[in-house]
Length: 199
Picture: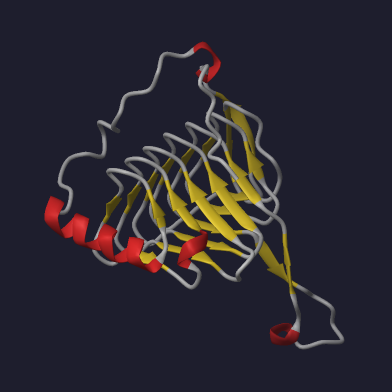
């Protein structure tokens, strides 16, 4: 599945080749290159200029992970396809914050130029809830998560199974998103509701 790239950018100018807010105080270039080299050997599809902080975790099925050009994954982030069919794809210049968890049973696709803050929870599956079976014996029910370009997700937000977040949307800190979010909409709360629109 390709990254959600829109060359026209809805009439907006071409984005910069880097994220000016995030390119200071990075790990050293040589240590980053060693981590990139190691994960490429494991089979991760890493584009040029990917930045992996120490302690960034690419787990279980590395061949099902794809990171676009200049993507940035910070310390403690977990990126995990949970089975051989699942995939996680992160677009160009997108940053994944400290201790953010992306666990895919079906698939998680994040577009370009996104800012995903720290301690965000993006998981595309739910446990079954039948009362005649113990919770830890029930199968997961999974639906893909799709996040468009230019999306900002605040700290401690949770993005739940099957959600699509449209291009340019903002998810407030601590929000629990269980329904689709329209492009350029601002949502927040538990469960998340529309708070406004980007101007």
